[in-house]
Amino acid sequence: MDCRTDRSKPASRLIQKHWPVDGMAYSHRPHIAASLTSYKAWAGDSAVTLVVTRSTVRNVMTLNVVAKRLIIDKIELSMRYEEGNFEAANITEYLLRHEFVNAGMAFQVPRQRYPNNRLPPYAVYIPLCREHGQYLYVECGMARNRRGTQTAYVKFGFNPSRLLVNEIAQSRLKRVLIDIIPSGGHLELLEDGKVLYAEFSTDYWGVRSESIDAYSPRLEHSLYFPDSGAIKTIVLHDDKAGRPEQICVYDKKASDWDRFRHLRRGMIVRVEAKRRFNRTPNTRRLRLRDLPGIENPFASVRIYDRELIANTFTAKRHATFLAQAQCRGVHAALSGTRGADRIRRERMLEHCEVSWWNPGDAWRGALDAVNRVLQL
Image 1 (cartoon, one colour):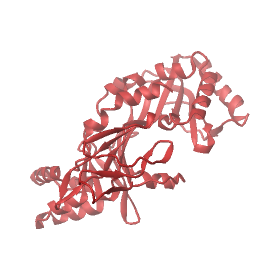
Image 2: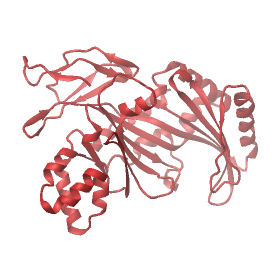
Image 3: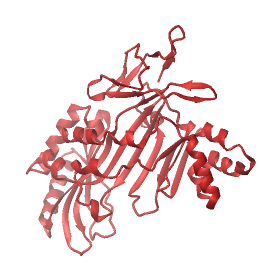
Image 4: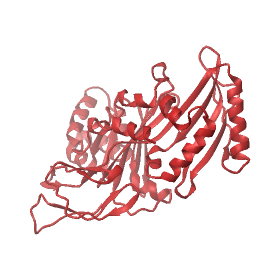
């Protein structure tokens, strides 16, 4: 993002020449004052929040972070029928096979077998808007619970954040769901569907992915994916089956280019929390409207400035730790540290946290994010 300070005017004046919003490549809105710490820009459903950080690093003041509001980037919902209702699964599979796949309105996904189920489910992708790559994932089958009884289900997966800016895809989604769920269509799915999986995302404009690192004391493993010698993606996860909790910090602009979405964007870092809710009894009956009440998935995430880490760990006894942090990441470097050394280095890392990241602020928009999905 092109942010420049006009030297002929006071230092608190920030000239924003290009203001990107969802659905538009650029919106020309010059002369946006940055004297306030936050500013709500009017952009309809694509309003953003301007966060001005005033941190001094080597006597250099930085004013370069724009935080977008929280969105639900992907979600999976399921409709479950009464136990032993085999006909419901058979009817849904027949409908998907003959009315969609055979008619050329969908394409079948190779069958995958779940460990606890006897038969593999039938799954298809239904295009909602081919021009923008929007699809609806539908899966039907029989699931076995811990008591051994089988229940028919239909699972739906889609991208709400992209549907909200595409009326054609929304209309197509409603027509498809009324065929599959004739009793209530999309309204019944959004109101009564059980949440299986959700991705919560928030974007930060003006941040370089190679300049930051991420750490979470709750998650035990980390994966770093470099590109051209620079780290572009950081994945933090635990060792539980199915990875029910996962944090991803990555370069959103590079990700869009890899998917051939060549938008004129500046530097963007996306912080994404992925949660799978069908792994524990407490969250198996979770509905979409209940999502704001769950524990903040960003609560344990800490984001560090790599330059501040290098300037903080200058003592010789930290040389090995610093080398591992720069090569493999802070998470991997701390995993090799035990006892008092780890406690000391975690306290030192507190002074290396970036000023624009706050887990509470990131999760504050959860209710608005859920309400936007319910209004589909």
